[in-house]
Length: 264
Image (cartoon, rainbow, N blue to C red):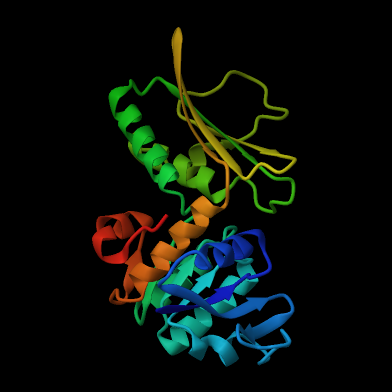
């Protein structure tokens, strides 16, 4: 049985992970950390059992973080100090946060992903394959839609798609164009457009538009339920529980799925 300390337990993804864990036989939520504090799962009255993550982290084999940048940093520092595996899907992180993950990975396995959906992995592979087959004159535009409460824009998945496309084209992130409000003049060839739509209860919708002269191609992934992400996060926790210290990507999990298991 793999015990998980869930950081961001009161968020949308935190609740989805807890629901997914209840359907799986080999994982359990040992402790929850949210804005109200840190508490063990067996606390009968739900009261905080400690002042912070450090007080409950001993109850878990893996820390799973879907919180905010501040929550991520606290979780990463504790994982670095205690050599605990860390799965994180928190978005809106910066270069300093990435460096912190490198430090954690010296002592424990770390897996960070902007999206834990297996379908998004397939979308990224399809985009790379399409760009390999198309002339460099084709334009690339990425449109993502999320619920009105999402705080970061563009989404981490849209950025990952843009980074994939930039590498294929030999471009840097200075080629990214975040919308075109007030822009005068034609679209430049060496740019990648990113457009964010916020409203309603969209869980996640990412479309990559590839446009040539007289024809176009659209590759799209639509998430219909957060359970798709939640089961992927639990599979990542299962994988890291026995992995050596290093930084991993979701692709590594799939390559070892015979050992880690992707349960549905």
